[in-house]
Length: 252
Image (cartoon, rainbow, N blue to C red; front, side):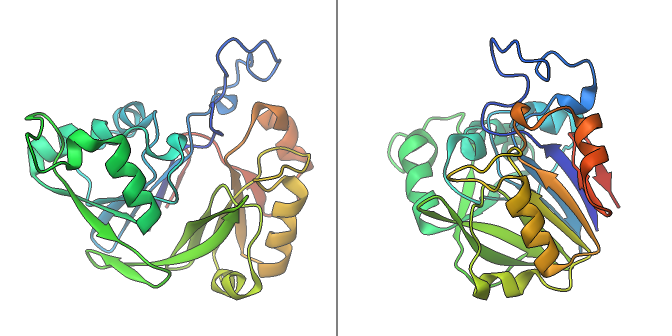
């Protein structure tokens, strides 16, 4: 399995527009973060989890010319706003499958009506195949993907487990039942917005508590705010086998 961190930032990315915070002004490329997204390549499938406003830039940076599917964690704009930029894929290879739960599908149809309408459809719109997913495993080609339901404030969203790797973003609580899906992992990727607690996202301590409970071999923190601090400084403060992810990081 090959994993590429396409983006590791929170909803506004880093640097934030107009921000004069020292992290936003950092010259360390690891402190520059696009909106969170992950690419997974395994078992003959190449899928991207979430398609935010930086999707075009992420595909160009990663040199991606073909996808087998896009999977959505939830409907917020920083995870969905790049949907129109799937056009080059569908123009070249035809229909592109997307996978999402029912509330996400409804929201995508409302936001991108011109893509999904059957009447007077815009000629240049991408051709997407909607696949509704539930809290049970599904397939993309031969890759088995198991949803993990987590709380994002009052919103129920999905993280995903693929073989012995799990990706959790925008969570602030995971039930005991869903936590069971995170045992016996080689790699856990989990959100940690900042050091301080947050009402809808894990802070550092809460993320570390999940890591301590499920005990993956290695963990990476993602969905990071500039308020967390410099990559180089935070990395030195983390427990053994816990790392900050950064844009462009590849795990193979």
